[in-house]
Length: 263
Image 1 (tube, one colour):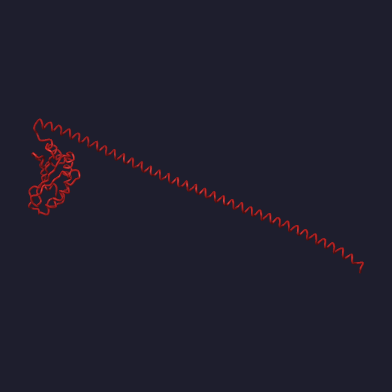
Image 2: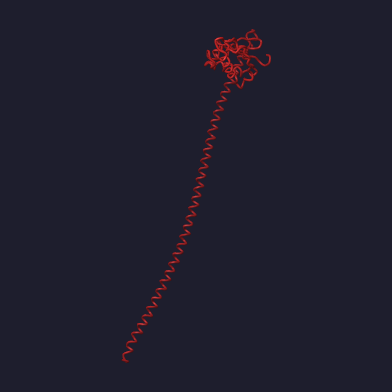
C-alpha cells in the first residue's frame, strides 16, 4: 500500500499546477476584457462628448443662419417699403405736376381772355369818348347778357348811380313757386363773372311791383332763397338788400350795379 502512494500524488500535483495555470489564464483574460471594456467606455464617452459638441455647433450655426435670414428678410422688407414709398411719392409728384400744368394752362387762358376783354373795352371806351355812345360799363353788361342769351329777358338801363338790371321773377324762380328756375345758372354765372372782373363793384337788390296772384309766404321764401343765392364769399360783402315795400312776391327784381367810389 505504501509503495503505491507516490503514483497517486504525482497526478494530483499536475492537476494543481493545471488548475493554477487555468486560474492565471482566466484572470489574465478578465483583466484584458476589463481593460478593453474600459477603453470602449472611454471611447464611447469621448464620442458622446464630441457628438454633443457637434450638436451644439450645429445649433449655433443654425441660429446664426436663422438670424442672417431674418436680417435679410427685414432688409428686403425695408427695401420694398422704401421702394413703395418712393414710387408713391413719384406718382404724387407726377400728379401734382400734371395738375399744376393744367392750372397754369387755365390761368394762361384766363389771362388771355381778360386781355382780349380789356382790349375790347379799351376800344369801346375810345369809341364812346369820341362818339358820345353808351358807357363802357353798360356796353360790357350788354355784351355779357348777349353771350349768355339773356338780352331779351333782362332789361338794362343806366342812370347817374350806375347800371340797373330789371330781372323778371320767372328767370330766377319757378312760376308760382319759391324753387329756383332751371335756367338761372346762366344769369348767375354772368353776374358772377361781372362781379369778379370789378372788385370795387357794389350791388343793390330791390323788389319791384308785387304779384297779386302769389301769397306773402312765397315772397318770404323767395327773399330768403335770393339772399342764399347771392351769398358768395367773393362778393357777398358788397351786396345789400333794400327792404321790401310789402310781403308779397314781386313780379320783377331790380339789381343796381354801381361803384363804391364815384367814377
